[in-house]
Image 1 (cartoon, each protein chain N blue to C red):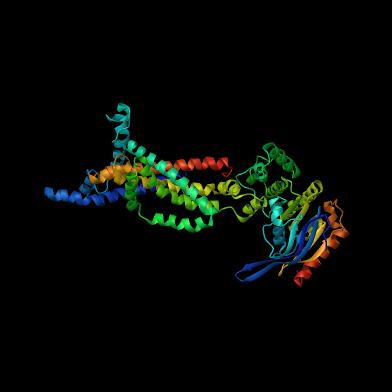
Image 2: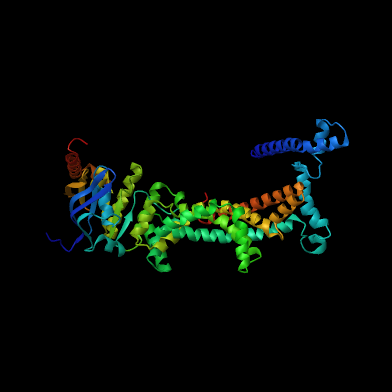
Length: 297
Length: 263
């Protein structure tokens, strides 16, 4: 219970700053409208207007919340095309688009994490890979993903790969890196004594990996998986921008085409909730795994 | 000089030089030593005298740069590949994700013992170090002394005739250390293994050993080898006997001579 008050305080502060900023940023439009109508308006009227514009520069929190509710619960439960009345998710609801994004993110994350783990094992066991691979892995992350994403999609499309996979590849592109870095650190975490011990048993490299390095790397792996899963979501959303179809990225782009700022923000909230849920899921797997390994006290 | 059939570990003019940024460091110089089957040999000396390096060389964890070193008539590397010894490190070094039984099983899994055999051996060595019933606990649930006993059990679990121990009780308090010293002696009597034991405690060395190797630093070398006249049966009270005190004196003199002044 003691943690409730600080959390509420921070939320209240954020909301306050948000409202003040909304008034400030939407004021110009309110003044322009008033000028066109030939009336003078004061700050009190501006404040009221700033809360209910249709396309505000910065929507107020309650507008975003209402839009989010409308695009999830209302659309699915009461809408004609919602799951309650049509039996399938409405393509206007954020639930549908979030699931589309989730599937690509999940697939990309699995590919990226698997690739990252394999790469880390190679780097730890092979001097040439240690020297040769890491610079390329770092270089890969210095390229802006918005620049390379459309090219990856075009290239994959030209070889007949389309659908969820191009998105997943871009998600994997972003998520493998933190996993490589974390896993290399984790696989190297056993101290000299622990590796010497295996030497006295004349254990092979694979036994060293299975019995010592891999179990020892678990805390590092989960830390990097949490970063990786969030990066994977960013990659998927970026990939969805040029692709069209469905997904939160597509909704963001559509919102910005038509100046639907409230819808953009509602979509951003959906993306944030999705990221939080995925990081939370990784955290749960972490807790269960570490408890089973006797490493959680 | 020919060694008898009983010689398990033989060092002839063994030297080991580390190349460091500040120039070569002579960790071992002209070390000559014969350890016979069933010996309990202590290596004692101040830090930097090469006692741990010598033990690690026997275990093929370090490689001498000069002289010859044989273990069971083989090179240390061959002996290691034949799993000729169990090694107990300064810290217990139990894997935190394995239970005590799981840790003791580790060498058995690596060496390919059958599951039934693993179970038997784990139970046997747990009893040997008086940890029966603790197999299912995780290392952090045990005291430091119990963890070190578990690590000794791990080194005893497979059939190595040689047990190498590198200051195994260095981090423990004196009361626990006394008890473990007694237990090690009992273990040694029951298993008839050849034991190499690094320590910096004079009473510990004298109490445990049949042979005490006194070493001194810069360069690391042997200054005295003392064959203990103490009987194999050694109650803790033996530490007040005349023989014991005399040997302790000789060890102290050896340490002093190696230093060239008072320790």
